[in-house]
Length: 85
Image (cartoon, rainbow, N blue to C red):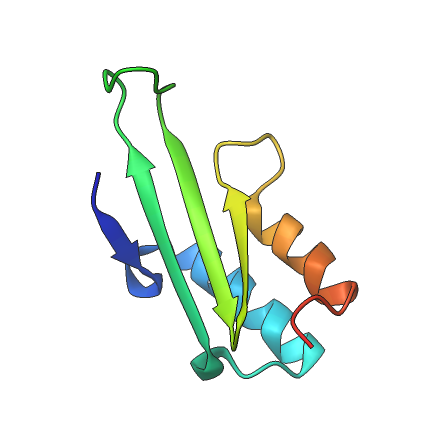
């Protein structure tokens, strides 16, 4: 399991993240976004699970990218709740 960066996310997810930041007047360059994809066959791991970490300053939130709800929707809910302010 390798940790990957924002630039490794699919373009659509990158664009959604950037749009959410722009709407909330958050500076994306002030964030650190990383994720891991767990491979099917790892002991105790379901196929295609993604764990996304978003950090702004000292606040870090983890999102389950394997959920029915995209992690960007969960991120947007946190932004609207002023989690990163």
